[in-house]
Image 1: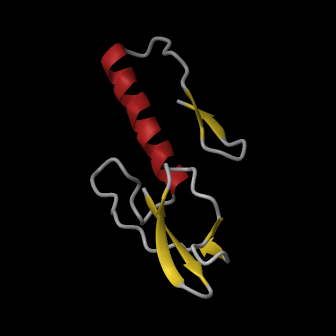
Image 2: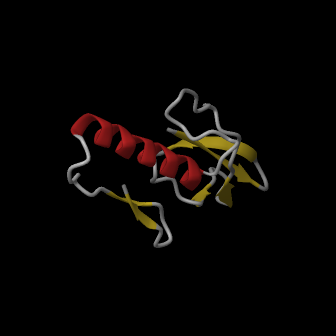
Length: 96
């Protein structure tokens, strides 16, 4: 994958690295140190699988999990269900 770098002498250029392996600084062809640049993202996440922009991620995921629990109870009766815990980060773990 191509990553952008900028040298103070030569300007901008790209280098190819595996995803997650691009260093913050590389040696430019002129011998100077070039720093990695960060451009706008070239893709957009669309579809129903992503949280909406109106609600926070935790709030929307909690609602989805609670709805799933209600569907399970409707399908399997009021008997005991397996407890499923979801980790929402920062120690926020909830059961459905």
